Length: 75
Length: 169
Image (cartoon, rainbow over all chains, first blue to last red; front, side):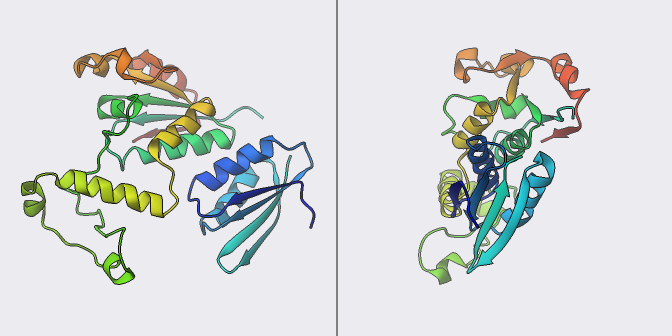
């Protein structure tokens, strides 16, 4: 899937992946898509919770060898 | 939708207890909350310009795991069960524990306290220092970072009374 911006949050722990995601979304226009990669297992639930509370849409979550890839569409 | 609000009271001045208020405040701000933190008693340490004095004490803290952040895997996995009586007698024990904790924090990709505090300030988290304890402990406003306010309990309630979440840490 295409995306407009990529955020590498690998190696970072709570709450940094969420804070960086928020910051990166701020640099996008409404409807654009952010790809986030993370190694923090807690980020799976946190990204969904972030999306639920902010109105941004979590399009997909995937895991690959302990790495998590999220696609989020800006509200 | 009306903006959600969160108020925190930060009362602890150690490296470990510096985390909860700054993690919650920065995350709440990222979620769109308006956030205020009221720093009182030992929590005032978290507003000092220089945060390098924050320490963690294993003394009287049996819940704190003591593990080596350096060396081979077998060494890192040992849980050091050092009796409190010994800890209290060894000079510099807290400094050693603090150094090890800082290394563990770094190894795990956890943000430092100065970084988290800066993130809070960038996110417009409002920080209020308790004027009464500033005087009680003989601090001066010049000891603290800028961009903070000074006030008392009534100042706290003005905002806290309208919040969705209000926590004492």
